[in-house]
Amino acid sequence: MHTTDTADVLPLGRTPRPATGEELAARLHATVSESLAGLADASRVNVSARLEGADVTELDVDLTGVVVTRVPSSAPEAPPAVAVRERTPGVVGRLRVQAHPLTALDVPVDVDADLARVPFAWVESPDDRLGVELLEPPATDPVTGSVRVAAPREQVLEAVRRVATRVAARQGVTLQQLDVDLVQQGPSGFAVRLDARVRKGLLGASVQARATATISEALVLTLADVDLSSGNPLVGAMLSMARSRVDAVAARPIDLAAQLPPGVRLQDVRVEVGEQLVLTARAV
Image (cartoon, rainbow, N blue to C red):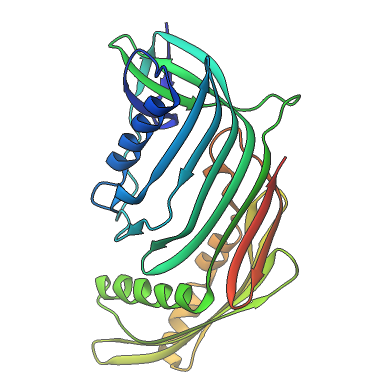
């Protein structure tokens, strides 16, 4: 008997495994509903599946119409590892996830993901709990497909303003104005410009921030050319003192691939900045 990290396992109730695609779809719907409890209404989620032995030949998840009303204020604690009594390998022949659109923080987000040959394992615990665990694909049989995520630019920026205003308020700072601009920088990068007016007590100031962001083929987000300034000499001096810490944060690349499920590797990542903000990638 061995253990696995429960963070990598999607719970599916009790053993035995589902015998039909309809039963699997019902269990997945229940799991999604539980995970979205308090965050979104999962009644609009549609799941369909086809089973063939231990393999799932087709799995379709449609999130169209789902409305996410809030996001967690903090990341959940990592659950402890659990014992595994039996692990049975399987493959999702074709996995499709779509939303046309789902709404998150008042932003309509269009999602299209179409993947093939996604490896997983049925996991059974000694107390008869059942789950599925995504696995790293073998080099000889990689996951393939495509992903596209798009959202209206102005609505995304308005959501950023709302979130920034709430975050600033929790720090005792009033965000009086925030202008955000994005400019395309090559096929996988963009420049960000922020102009803000803030007030804390009797102190008011303008603050400007500039940076460029690039996503590499390995799905690593890198920030460069970061600059902070203010028209207020006192605030400008404070920003200068904090510059070394800002540079240290900017110098640390963010591995976006690490946030993906195991077994999914994306390439040809492209960012399009126009009326829509569009992220596309291929799984290879």
